[in-house]
Amino acid sequence: MRSGSRLANDAWEALLSAHAVLMKEFAAQGIWRDISMREYDVLYTLAKCREPLRLGELNRYVLLSQPALSRMVERLVERGLVARDADPVDGRVVRLSLTEQGRAAQRELGLRHARDVTRAMHARVGPDELASLTAICLRLTGPGRATASGAGGLSDGRTV
Image 1 (tube, rainbow, N blue to C red):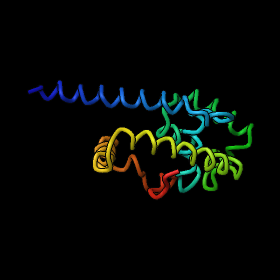
Image 2: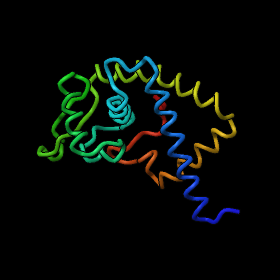
Image 3: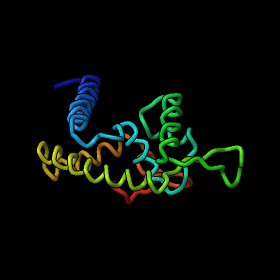
Image 4: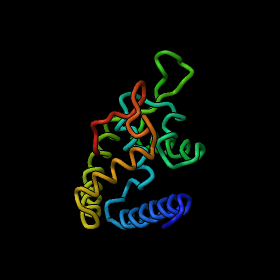
């Protein structure tokens, strides 16, 4: 029997390997034309939010450094996909949200990506395993992280 440390590290390595394999598979799909996977991650995160986010809040949900995220948001603003607006309470603070064009682009790409995710996941694991995987991953994210509540938090009803 493996020790607790070995088991935990094996599980972590398996999780990272699965993520890498699936992300490479998704990246190879022909859906990423005008919007990259990383840009889509930002659009998807903003689409799930109940209200506009500060850059620092957005940074908690995406796998980019703050400087890289700042540059990406600038490009998304220039392309008309993301809006920057002053916070109504504190005018010094900038909040980010999707424009209608950004919301439409995210929905269109999201539907195609969701089909690819569904196909890849169902090819590898069954419904009971998917339910277990979801429960485990939500526990790993910690309380309130996956479906953050409150101002600027992620809504818990959206899938795309």
